[in-house]
Each structure stands twice: as C-alpha cells, then as structure tokens.
Amino acid sequence: MPRIAYFGPQGTFTEQAARSLAGADELVPVETISSALTSVRRGEADAACVPVENSVEGPVSATLDGLAEESPLVAVAEALLPVHFTVLTRDDVETVRTVASHPHALAQVRWWLEHNLPEARAVVSSSTAAAAVAVQRGEYDAAVTAPVAVEHYPLRVLATEVADVPDARTRFLLLRPPGVLPEPTGSDRTSIVAAAANRTGALAELLAELATRGINLTRLDARPIKGNFGLYRFFIDFEGHVAEPRIGAALAALRRRCNNVRFLGSHPRADGVQATIEPGAANDDFGNADAWVDAVRKGELA
Ligand SMILES: O=C(O)C(=O)Cc1ccccc1
Image 1: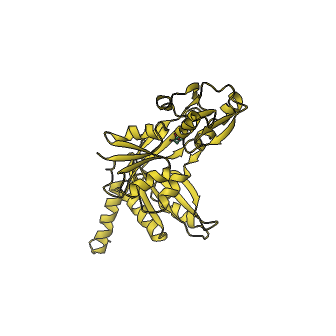
Image 2: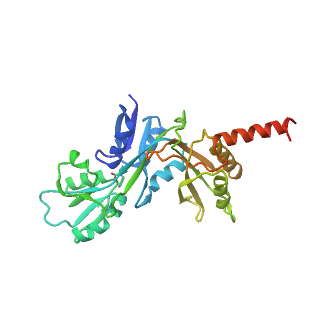
C-alpha cells in the first residue's frame, strides 16, 4: 500500500490534511518536516504531507528550505484547512505556568494567551501534537493543539475554538519525486524557486516574465541562501499549469534568465479559484501566435 509520511506525531493539523489527501494510502507520522521530505527522497515513503503557508504567520520556513535543497520534489496536491485551536492541560494542573506549541500555533493565539492564561510562559515545541505529548509527560502545563488531538491524548480540555484571527487557514502540500504531473483543471497553481542574481533589477526581470504573460501571482517569499549572507531565493506561486502555453513560455524565459530555477509542481488549487486569463494570454492565443510565426518562417506569410 502506498505510504504517506506526514509531519506528526498523530493528532497534528498536518495529519488532518494528510487524511483529506490520502485516499486509502497508509499514513506514517514522522517527527519533523525535514524527515517527512527525507523519507520520500530515500524511497521509504511514496509521498510527504507538510504545511507550506499560513494566513496569519506566513510561510513555513522548514518546508520552503527543504524544497529548495537536496533532490527535487514536486507538489501534486494541496489541502486548505481552517485553523482554530484546542487548549489541553492535565487534571493535576492548578495554575498554567507553561504553555507549549508549534511556533505557528503560538503566534495565532498570542492575544488569547495574554488574556486567558496571563501567568503562562510560551514554550516552542516541534508540533502541536508534540506539545500534547509533553504535557502528558508532565514537562509543561498546557498545550495549544489541533482539535483532533483530544482523540489521541487523554488530557483535560481548557478551551476550544481558540483563534485570535477568525478564518485563519493553513495550506498543506502533498509532495512526490518528479513523475507524472496532475492534469490541468483550469484552477491550478504552479510553484517555482529561483535564486535571482545579485544585481539591479534581477528580481523585477523575473517577475516581468510572468506579468507580461498575464500570469497572476498567488505568493512570493524570500528565504536566505544559507552560507551566503545577503543572498536570497525567491519562492513564487502563480495561477496556471505548466501544461498551459503561457506558463510554459514563462518558465522557459525564467530558465533563460536564471540558471537556478527549480520547478516545484503544478496541481489543482484546493479553493477551486479559476485562473485569471488576461486578453491575449489564453491557450489558443499562444497556439495561433506560434502558428503565425511558423508560417512567417516558412515564407508563407509576412
Ligand atoms: O503542529 C501541527 O499541528 C502542524 O501540523 C503545523 C501547524 C501548526 C499550526 C497551525 C497549522 C499547522
């Protein structure tokens, strides 16, 4: 049975996302985002499910860095989960003095903690479920977790539906080694990472290749290239599928301008938003224009 390694342990938001993407595949919890990616690269799992971005805290750096380095992986599907939290404690805790969670979770409940657990010091854990495990072991007094964590960890529920920002969401990716790409649907997302040269206008030139082909960006993040202070990689997500001519033409142009472009996948969007097609940027427009150039080259037209 195909195996999907997910950022665990059991009871994380990522497990919820993996369940929605897995079908009948076996789910295997691993401790870190990096180990989920490594298990696919080593062939120990067929796919990895990891968080990639959050509407409150932004990018998940471990995922971005893990995709830019080592052997390539491509995103073949995504899941978008609404994120609100459950706060768990033990029966023997009278005053909560330490509250543990994943940094993205702590960032999303800062206001709630100040007003409801003012004596609690926030402690970072590797995931929301790892925080629940630590509370069970007596290492901390409370954990900020995913709602499903109560099914795995028999702790006392202090609060549910906790969220400083209503309607917060996290997007998760299902990653595989390069292979057959999902078919285009009209509501797709393509992702790349490129190291723009360190000279005036280099990033603007890359973005212009996308803009002039009518391609709408959905995300732009910069991450430092470790060991090269001041140099950055740019993670760019945009509407469309590499099978579409405007996306293929833009990728070819990026590749010409920058020898350090990595394709990170084209897959259907979880929110079903249809790609914006600017005038002159439809598949037929590209096809007709290419046919015209061919005819000109053959001397059939002027
Ligand atoms: O720790 C988890 O449960 C995760 O899956 C990462 C995460 C943390 C906070 C919000 C969304 C995802």
